[in-house]
Image (cartoon, rainbow, N blue to C red; front, side, top):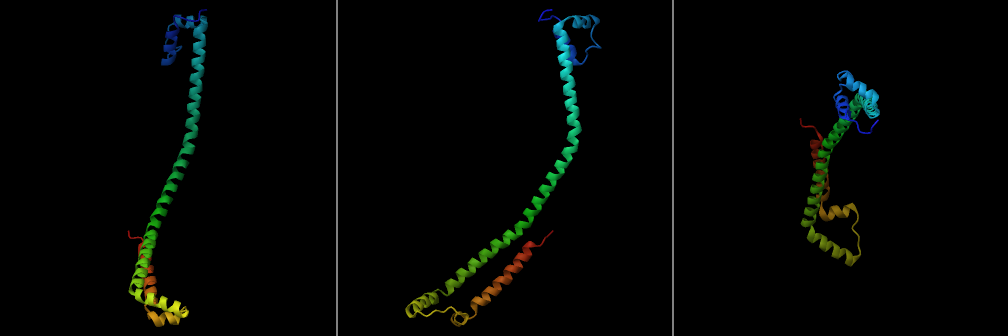
Amino acid sequence: MTSNCSHLTEVQQALISGQWPQAVTPELRAHATACNRCTQEILITQHLSAAKASAIAAAENEAPAAAPQLLWWRAQLRRRNAALAQAARPIAAAQIFAIAITAAAAIGLIATHWDFILSHTARASASSVSFSSFTALVGNWSLAPLILAITLVATLGGVALYLSTDRQ
């Protein structure tokens, strides 16, 4: 009973190749039953091989049940996110367009009436008279702000409707 056996490598090769005990010589089998080191090697290798085979079998039995459900859920999540992103693009474009048109209209309105705004501010501060009623606004600026507001709302509504429809 030695710790190093001269036949240990032969036994290991037979175990690794899967030839133990059928394809080995009867002398090697007789030696393995008599040698403590070879017997331990055979028992440990067979035990680890059996544990590996059972773990692989258990993984194969569990994997197909969970994998398709997980793949389906991920596909549904991707499809939903893509649909949300596609639906949000026209709305975002309409919002940007509306902000740009509103800013352009406000700048244009202020630019065309800049002299009146300055003179009105100077007159209002000098006389302490407030022009906060709608009739004062219509009287001073005519109907330009009202017409501009109605036109802006109608235009932006049409643009938003156009951008939100599917053009496939």
